[in-house]
Length: 370
Image (cartoon, rainbow, N blue to C red; front, side, top):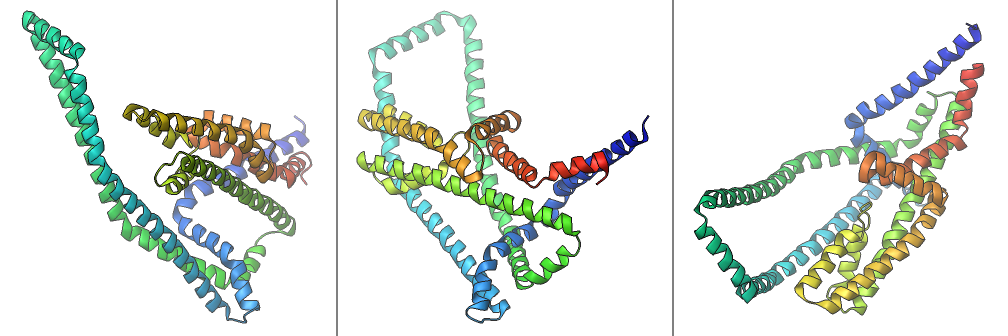
């Protein structure tokens, strides 16, 4: 065989082994260092603010880092506290209206049972049960199995809820510890930002630094573009739903609209996860006008999203609408619901690597050794 071909195969194996090593390192190392990754992300986000405090206000860098982190923690705690408070208020309101809803369902059930048709059916079933003793054991066994299944399902559900509460409470110390590590990592990384950057730059050759810089800048722009597109979509959904609920004169229209906007982050399900059960409930409850109004509102939201989402996602992330839809569909088929996010993100990464000429450089290395 041609020696040049052997060299090309050897370089191709080196490239494949290198890619596999990077993937394995990401898979196995990330669970060990993820607090420091979050710390670095926070440091990257607050770095411009720290620079402003240091250069314009002439503050020592460690004081600027401390003030910025305190402001960041205060903002996060305020937002979380406001959300928790609002959720508690809504739960209290729901508990107050739950009794009336249960009474309505009980009255409807009693009215249904008292109907002549149902009474006639009950009489026929009772007569069949008495006149066919051979079936009594079978019927009793099926009723017993059904009762046991319902009891087991209820027990499992209660156990799952209680275990979830216990797991959440038991994880609080671990969450607090990880949060402290993340904040300390963010503090030290931001404080010595330039020293760390110079040290890491010295580990890489010049051409590799340039390539990594191009890839990173493109990925960062695409990431912020994706977040921007998602923010635009949930904002549009929240505004449309809120206006529709105000027109329908629904109580807590603003709160419900904001909540449905957040639910819109759920891939594939989106607004339907909240509005479809609500629409079904209003029709069952007998409020036809509200049910029709919500159905029309849901249709308006779906049409608006189907028209706007591909264009917003394409303009923000830098992908054409057709590849974006193809990536979402392929991701859905390969990875399920999560693939709706993995698909476009994978396209962004591949597009960024291609624009940085990484594939061209790898091909040139395999073919020519350069």
